[in-house]
Image (cartoon, rainbow, N blue to C red; front, side):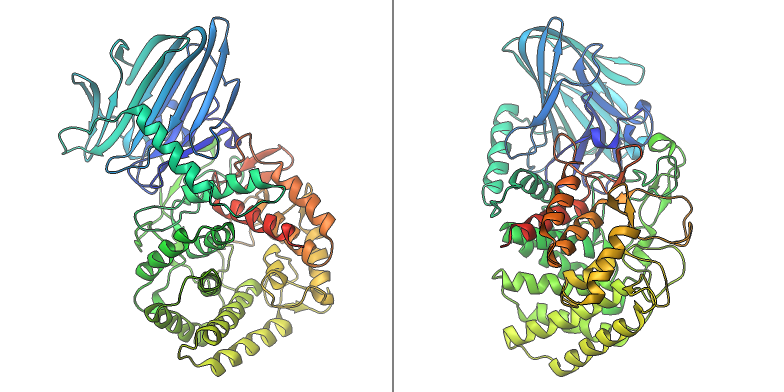
Length: 588
């Protein structure tokens, strides 16, 4: 079996990422991009679906592991009866071909090591043809090729469809393994100096992390979250993926298994807000350029998500040859939510453009023209039902969160016009802002319950209504706000954390359940702080942060009964919420 979700470490090169278990096995890697088919898919199946394990012979999980400083360079150590060994894993920021470098270092005595490289392209479906050259093992299948370079003296051999190696490492010795992917029609790979690549990778990460503005008491958690968010940004275009993994379940054995290797406008916008608060303007500028390219065209064609280069076609398929993570089926690649109407994304996009302006990124006229086109569309369609933030697979409804974010779009558009002096129908936007506000207060508020509900006419609660105070839609001392915060806290509680919503099973169009949604727990901490309960907010925040694994990584959800993480890992949405709440709590 693959490890528990929280057992995985992340490494990456700002174009893709790998997940590595505590046992030293690379169980998930897509090449050359985040959304490419994987060459290691043990995470969603069995070892035969592809992995690369490098560990002491016969050893299980490591003794210790950690990132070296403020980087994505992973160091994993084992203690054995004969000695101690460290494996350093990283992916250099690439010039051309993606590489995964593993350095085995003897720390004490001597340790017999075992390597098993089982490449399986196209999500574990295609076994490559492997040949030996003077310095490499070369695996080829269709358009893909992977080249494994090992140093002289390390013997590799074929065994049961894998490339195996057995060797001994003594104290002070360092042995380098370099795996390079490139299109199969290219004749050879460039040679890499692994030690130089390690030095340069460390310097680049540490230089980037050194620009972080946060200096509060949770700096370690905040900086690790910001590094993780940076790792999910696709460097060539500026697009930001929601997670590097696909089909990790929201319920073990259930069907809520989704592909998150795409750029949701909502998630990307929230990620940029967190990076801006952390002091990282370059990412905001790059993302805005990606946004303009991705959504260029008719505003009616705005999608909820895009590929890392702005691709629009992301068809959802199932991989019936993969048994799924702990038998959680179906395994899905692509995402059908791309075709949904989610009106809240307009608010998130406009709000991010406003935050960028406040951070000193100027509003160019062509960007302003796009914003006006988006507002023209929203002005005519905000009153329509949609699938909402949670991407329900049932009928469309008038979700309160979607309406609140339509109000945010109008409010921030007005503020942008006032701040820049650029031409705009400001009076119309003000009128829209007032109309949406009145509509939400009249139809999204349940008089009998005394709270805002999930959608018009509902009795169900939704943690997303916490955005009513988070966005400034209503002041924090409004009795309706306070009662809604208290209701979310009590009615959506799941083992001390927060569910997304309540209601009848299957009301969202899907059978089964899910865990507590970690971002919602951070939102509740924000709301508690805003309503004057800062100590309670701090206690909740600390409790959620404590759920992170030993490397500071969090997935999408938490199962308080089984005490394990659920959903795709690591999850941008969760780490964004952590960063924003930490900044909120640091404010006087």
